[in-house]
Structures are given as C-alpha cells and as structure tokens.
Image 1 (cartoon, rainbow, N blue to C red):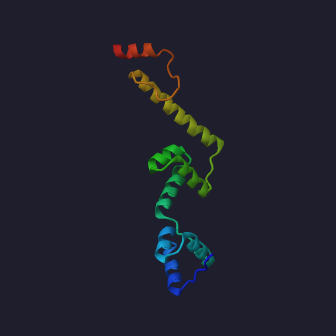
Image 2: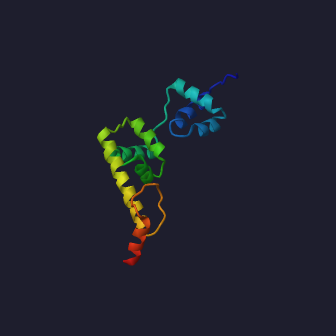
Image 3: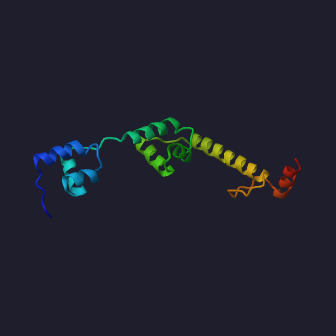
Length: 145
C-alpha cells in the first residue's frame, strides 16, 4: 500500500472542496482515490454539508408526514417512496397507529372510487378490488343514461 504525502496545497484543496463537492470530484482534482480522500477528510474532521435539495425535501416531508402517504409525498417531490422513507427515518419521524390507519383508509377509499369510475365508463379495472358485484349490469345502465 502506497503512502500519500499530503502537501499544504493538497490539504487546502481538500478543506475547500470536500464539504461542498462530491468525493469523486475532489479525488479527481487531487489525483487520488476516493477512499484516500475520505480517510484524510475523516482525520481532519471534515464533514459534508447538507445539500440544499435534500433540505428542501426534508422540510416538505416534515410538513406533510402526518397526512400524506410516502407515495404521495414521493410523487410531489419526484422521488421514490423508499427515498421518502429514508429521509423520514433520518429526521426521526414516526407515525402513530391512528395516523397510519387514517392514511391507509383515505388511500383505500380513493382507490375504490377510482375503480368505480373506471367500471362505470367501461374501462378495465387497474387493481383487483371488487367494487361492483355485477359489472355488465352497471355498464348497461351507464349506456342507457
């Protein structure tokens, strides 16, 4: 394993770039590997700054966590529901049983209404939820209107 001799110029560049740039970019500027850059940054006590985009997302999630599902929040932010879950966990947000129940109940009601509308207009259902007992009868009734 080769030992890296850190010059003052390299250390100054590391202190300046590491908190705000990606590790890959910093490593490319210094002509070192990413692991070497990370190790030296840890020795110097340098930490990455929180990205402004992440902070905006975290703020939105904190404000809508109690009344929206992860999928709804993800759709609004343009990220996956897993990413929403990770950010919520990092913020230490937890839902009570009552909040979980209210959100799932609201989502289920929306799904049933959406399926009902699709059947009334003669479209195929998206989910396997049975919302109407006699599909043919409903289609005939809607055609007669």
